[in-house]
Length: 73
Image (cartoon, rainbow, N blue to C red):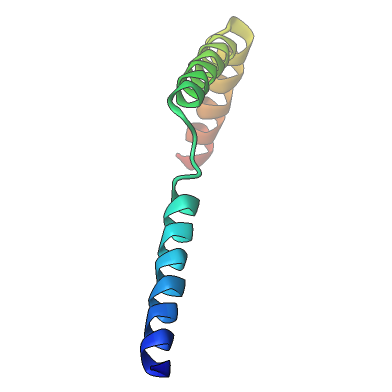
């Protein structure tokens, strides 16, 4: 009798552990959060592109590359 009760109790405990782990794995972002994340990343990429392609930054980057190539030769 005690063995059957122990077996059922063990199965119940292991079943609850599996349910809890499944709940924890599903603790991610929802679709609306993904959409907002993508929009924010795209906006950041646009701002970064505008900064990098501005005249002064482009000239500085070209100067850095030119100095690196001149020193290597």
